[in-house]
Image (cartoon, rainbow, N blue to C red):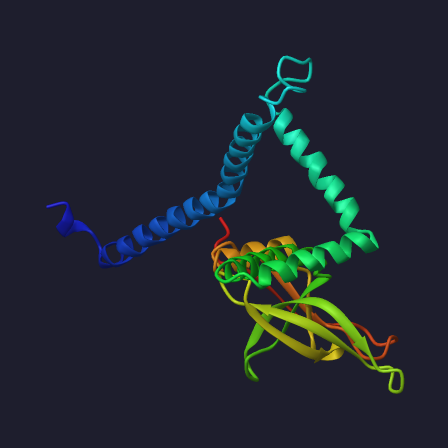
Length: 237
């Protein structure tokens, strides 16, 4: 009898409310998981490295039973070793030796494939620290915009114009993408930080910033910046 007394609006809107609650729970749970996974992976990697390096370093005669024989000494030794290698390869001889090493691995079948892929992945991930800013550009066709990272700039001494080298990553794997050369005044600027943009890429658009502001920088320095608009995420709340 109670169901028959419900109005038509209550019956129509009840499923929509359930879908909103379900969508809210799913989006926030996934956002929390994605935010927590890097911490868990980092802890797991550190524990793994400490255990493996300690099992190799602590049994050594100059470490075992000494005052510096404590859990974690292996990781410290590894960090110092990496630092020393970094100092060496920063010299002329070190760069040559690193080049000889690369050439040697390139000559070995199968090994060169694994070595090449690993080096490419490491280079791709570490290259994010060279991104100067996040921009948007018309890509892959007019009327559509894609997010990209500015990796460098090129100047014309004759016209004083400048072009930006923009890396447009693929989602959710930013290690592959496209490189575009775009005139600076054709870029759409944004207040999105590089770290937040990387989260957006890795999550496939699930982790959205609360708001985005788009603007164009004029060619002439005395002109005002054109604010295109400010857009807020629907996932707030």
